[in-house]
Picture 1 (tube, rainbow, N blue to C red):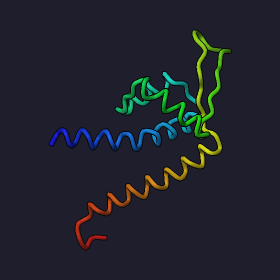
Picture 2 (cartoon, one colour):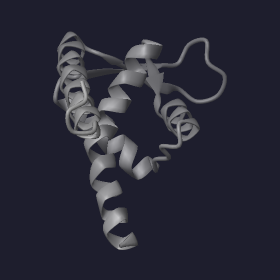
Picture 3 (tube, helix red, strand yellow):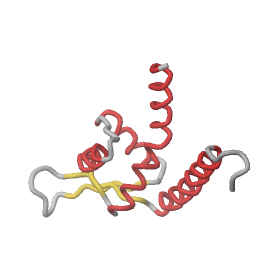
Picture 4 (cartoon, rainbow, N blue to C red):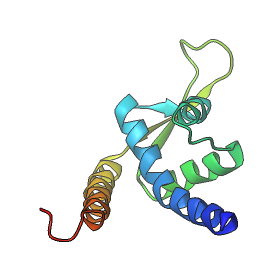
Length: 116
């Protein structure tokens, strides 16, 4: 049974990782890669760089994120910051609606028969 549960967790994680990433970037206006990795880990959603950066690149290529390098006012190396584009905001709003709909379905499926 554990193997099946592990497979299910992987599939669920793939499905909501993009959603969580966009939510977090919206909440913080803009974020850079290491900051994203650290914050995700605090929410028990650890991610490897080899997973995060291709996802950020895809979301940027899809027009949901914009990326900009910042070199001024930083200690250390330049950082590539990501923020939502107008299309990203629109897509995230649609994702939120669908996610909330799915949560409602799961909640209602758990109700005993005949309850309201």
